[in-house]
Image 1 (spheres, rainbow, N blue to C red):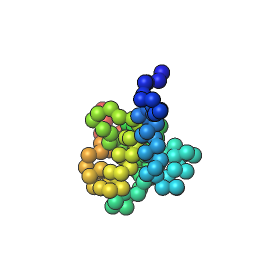
Image 2 (cartoon, helix red, strand yellow):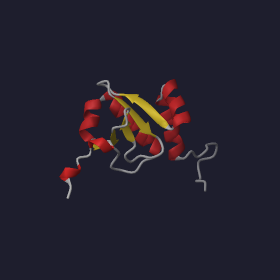
Image 3 (tube, helix red, strand yellow):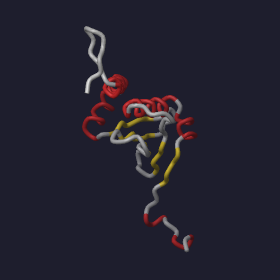
Image 4 (cartoon, rainbow, N blue to C red):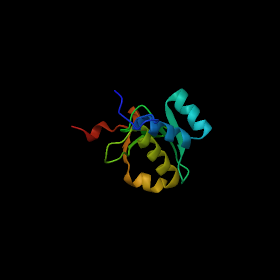
Length: 119
């Protein structure tokens, strides 16, 4: 399906525009990771290391050690690539704010689970 656009211009979908913008803001290393491994490696402003999974936008950020998954998405719908760019920029510019607003989910190793706390 195509939308009508003024003569001499081509219609570009919001998703394509978002993806182009995302790739314009990635380092060469980050772009290689996205293309080969489907995640963006990000170093936060306080030195934390994260991976932004580019296969989804919910619970798609994890600490580089894989122990904590974070959910930090927009309140309004937007193209996936815009979500990933917002996540990347927030972590890089203000990691403390990212940690304040993100919902963390801690994954525990089997040996860390205390079964005596459950009925």
